[in-house]
Image (cartoon, rainbow, N blue to C red; front, side):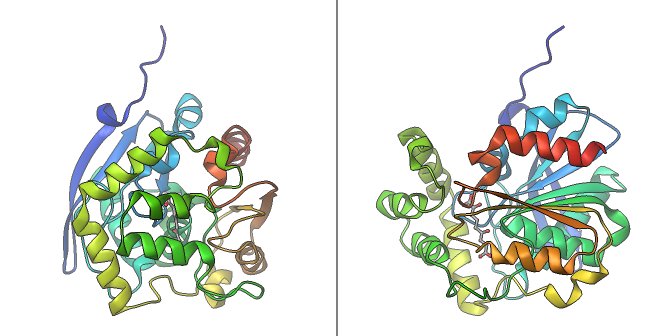
Length: 287
Ligand SMILES: O=C(O)/C=C/C(=O)/C=C/C=C(\O)C(=O)O
């Protein structure tokens, strides 16, 4: 019998998360079944979502017997909006803990892209007993780069797009987002624009959050040694959003980590090099 196709609509779910003063309706996609769960956390670009970030990565993991949860962080996609004036990495970690509690999942591997990587590290620091392995891709900690002025050119364009959500600004961001822009289709631009404009409250709240606290992603470098989880760090050599030396800082600090750098790759390794990325992640999670 052929396995049913996994679609966004057929896996779409909501959970209400109450944690301290937080009371949020959170959207997630619940894909496949298995004793082990992989949570995927998306990046902070306008119009991002679990599905938009990871649609090339779900099926191989589901086929290998993992349950895959894509959580839309507060302020993105179909999740409730929020103004965050503290650490957004920690906010996402607290909400993820609430979601795992609601789903009765004791422990999960966490795969985070950019902001999702920062949030995975925040989760591992707060709830070490709830983490299996970590995959950090183009993220893991905020903080300065030794070689690249901050904010990076990519983050400046991302923030410009939040302030003025036009197709021109979207294209200006996307043209330095991936290494090979030939893979970007008009259909992809339009879907992303539609996602963004469907939730203007998210765009406005992101700008308000930056005004309240320009450093949404704290530097976890001094605390990385506390994390014992086995960690695979993956970076694009030509990442113009979160510079590659952040990956070097992560492997320097995380005692059980290794780093793979894709050449000819920007900020979206899981999409730009999906086949190899999927093989590496599966090998890492199953050995
Ligand atoms: O400022 C940072 O450290 C993090 C930036 C991001 O998380 C950017 C991510 C962008 C995407 O993944 C996207 O899909 O737009």
